[in-house]
Length: 230
Image 1 (cartoon, rainbow, N blue to C red):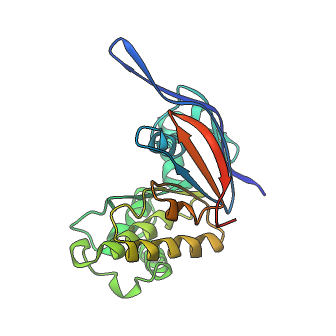
Image 2: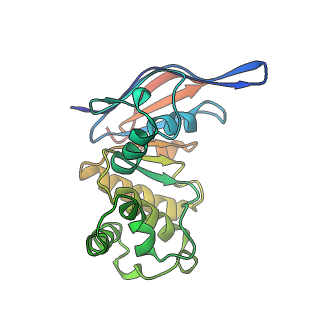
């Protein structure tokens, strides 16, 4: 199976005054297309930093992140912005929806930034919302929807540009267990249709849907095990 993203000898450091804080050290990970990979570890282990680096939201101190044929470490700001817009979908714990926009308008935002014509934006937003089971809620504001519905809107927004990989940072962290299970079922359905996911979680049950579970500690990979999705 082809790789969606390859992480090679990745290191991330932050200089704080006279001290250097190493958040990730010598991380190697090959995420295959069509795979769900879950990253687990205690707070401060580097989970979110790894996600941000793969998503092009931050740059590594050393090492490589290869998406397709491109190495993110060699990209300038403009190229990284295109990568984030065209190749990556983001699902956040806190949904990150614009309160004044409807579900349809929130989902359309990435297409607006990409310069897609209004009629095409409308068509694709409705298609994405239908895929996540919200065809009847397209005109509702976030405040008029449940937490699970808001996360479905966020998921529709994440897939609108048909990205190579979808990154989920604790995607069920703000949801009750029943609603969280609905989002996990949606992720499984989307993965069965060929979508690739890299998610962080503290919850072993969430990680159980993954094909592989990567355990981080002190910024290093300490174990990679087969998950229930394999």
